[in-house]
Image (cartoon, rainbow, N blue to C red; front, side, top):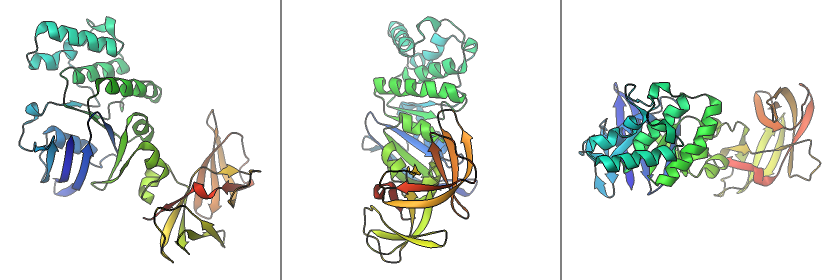
Length: 346
């Protein structure tokens, strides 16, 4: 439904978006995931018509909308601070877009009632929004954005102002409500877990470009760059050199280990690559393909698990979760199957 084609944008003469391409399908929720300052919010403003790109085009249902003013695009935009009207009630806030569209009052009242039920706030219609908690305000802001039935809904860090526990509760509600309404949505966040919980597809934005787009599962298990892997919290990476189409040499503590790996494309002899080690078992009695000698650097209790920092070689530390505690300085062995080794080319 939406195509962003070769969009570039400069902020104070510094490139922020560079030949960026992006698309969104019908009824799809796509999450733009990236660091603060990567241009995520700017891209939303360009799509909404609040900013004009220096180059490129925006296609909606096959037609360019670059010259269509924001109010005629019928795109909804929900901000992090919600931007609710403090002098109005909950119901009046939700009805704002309907009033602007001159929706029949009876119809408007029914839409507001349905949305209050959908967000679980049927008895809150006559309350002032200043009397609501942060989570309740977030629900009202979402209902207000949904009320005019926009062609596209864009959410800019909608849970960013809430505490961690409340975010975990509301993220599932957001997914449910967006799914029930069936409106294609673009959700912006810098939080990996938030993106994976709500998105059908995740698009990672870095250096002004979408560097990878895929399902949450494939984004996590098959990152296409070292930067993407580390941004996703996948720090268990070692440099390697290809010694065959599916074999690599890895230097560990002065020793060279030859490992077979799964890769989509045959490797070129002496090609420099990276290996992402996924999962891993500690001191396992199971028969595994590869063992890495290591040393526990730290062990921190996190409630449901222990967070371990494990030194593989000088300057290289892996992160692992364990069910039991380990003493700092303890020698251990990490075990991996071939399928746990993911090749990263860049």
